[in-house]
Length: 161
Length: 456
Figure 1: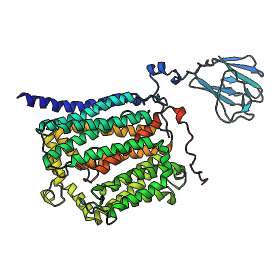
Figure 2: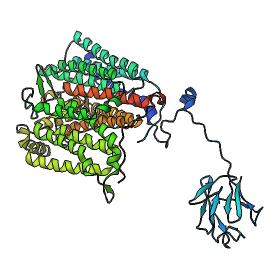
Figure 3: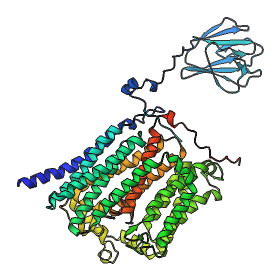
């Protein structure tokens, strides 16, 4: 094999390699855009970008204290506390309720308090007198924030950390 | 429609870097051709390299001034494809004694000039929305032009799609591709809600109202008209596919695709039974390797020869200038993919397909990122036009589907297609600039012209 044909062969394969170098350089140039895995955070800034453009970084929301106990603040059972575990709580006069309310204005199966994610939700179970969260009557399940009074008949309960 | 968040960064330097690589590809291809075919490295070679570099730098500099945040990979990919196309056409010229290469150089210059002027003159792609109905009229005008006696170039290779003005011949249908996309994007972005909400439901399909079918009928008439009067199957498929994708993207209703496919199947079957040239195309495709069809006039000789060429190339190809792609009829336009497949092999052909995929992907990315629905639809439509063209022509050359006369974007010899495609690239660059630009300078209210939604 003489020199020229060797050069030509090298160049021939060199060209194929060059074409693929081009393809991969283009892919590398746009790799930043390919981060599409994370939900709703497409194109989240990398650590380096975050250093250069601090405005891009979203401030993480302050961690909320978890509710640990349920306290009865008004009504016949005032002062009663109930440790919250991960299980739903049935509130009412019925004997199978988790917190049996001795309250004539409460229904047998009055309301349900259940955890979802890090929050507790309250749901009215079709009671006669209704359930009030912070003064408004419940029409659907709503999250209960810490310290917001929930009125059931003459009883008022609150979640505490 | 969704919006994506990215860091606002011009990234023009990365573009310059990739551009150097792309130019290297074009120049090296040309050098290999000269080396293998025993040509000397004369002035032409250096002038051409300089011209290609000058043209791409002109676009690059324009971008620095006018569209600072445009996508950095669209231009290099385009230059790489165009450069490779020029080299392959030059290579075929040397063997056949044609002058297609010179004409391609001339048209490349014109096309880049057109792209640069679009970038300079068009301040914002949303301006085009005002010309929605003018675009429709212009498309109709452009499509009828090749049928007007006097300027019509008559029947060329079985299709009446050319006009002749003095020494220049031109394919107005290529420009109609852009104007139709502008019309569909403008119409659909204004009437999207209307089309989306009105109409009866049939099970899981929401059927559109008859009067909302208007633009679909326009698209159907345009594509059937092209097929009947101009005998151009490829363009016909392109127009209808373009519309179907744009309306699907605008409404995300699968029922439109169903209606479109039904119309297409009906039209296709009717064309197959009525028009002899379509019948011949299909038969030639199915029985391509039958000697009777290979020998026939307008038979499968072209496709079969292309297949043999690619088989000859194998995995790594024969090397530029060392195969015999010139034995395929129309090797530098319709069959340029076969020429590339023969001389650069499967490895080279796949690199080309990858470059197309990247280009189309960037177009879709611009659509995802831009904030106005007109821009989204226009970017999707234009990049899908590339995608469909690549599919139809590469599928045709590799005998996946019947071969039709669509051009391979940027590679094939043909001035009108080159001009149209560079304008499309300019529009995509403009839209991607709007997509990647920091939000505060782009936060203009849009969609004020959106019509009220009916209560029904």
